[in-house]
Image (tube, rainbow, N blue to C red; front, side, top):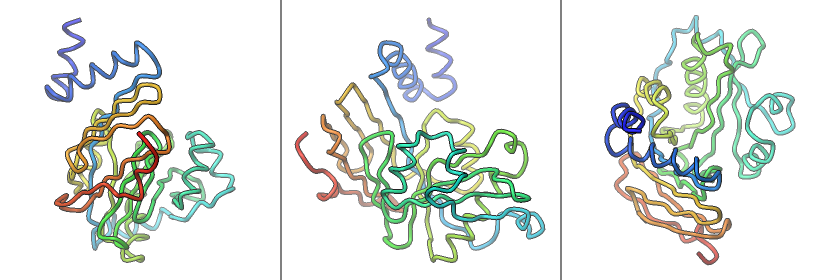
Length: 242
């Protein structure tokens, strides 16, 4: 038992390690109990490509539209994918020699999280996106797939005058954290969500800092800025009774 506690603390640090152990314990008790520990990150869109042109040209980035056959290949549940399109998200696919090797989803100016009842509101408005569910198919994970996707996505965003992309990382996903660190990401906030059946409680490092609800229609808004200096709950997000 002590080794099961000590190992996560050694891997993630004291506070995060304890949260990891607590989360695993809650899930062992019931599938309706969960602890989500997030780090909210931002990356400036670089002016220069991430890959030399001879490598960058081997990847093609194009939008995958609602109803396309590629949507069926994505491991997310059908209702989640439909909800993403319903809120205006776009999906960009990365192709190599005509084969889909991975994809990423983007929302402009705001994003309704699909794991918890939270909406991220992005600043500067018109210059920021939220990226999520970056996925590379297993047979393409050993090559340049990750950098190739970002190289194309950055070009796509530069053409639309987007300066920043925000993302949510699970605190315990160390490979993803290391990969994003190479792209120049920085942490702007952290949030912990406790879920117990219909109850959801949030603690965050930015305003409103705390939020609780028992209705799915009630969402908390977190304002994300590149410098994380301001973050207010959006009155248009939190509706209904807690």
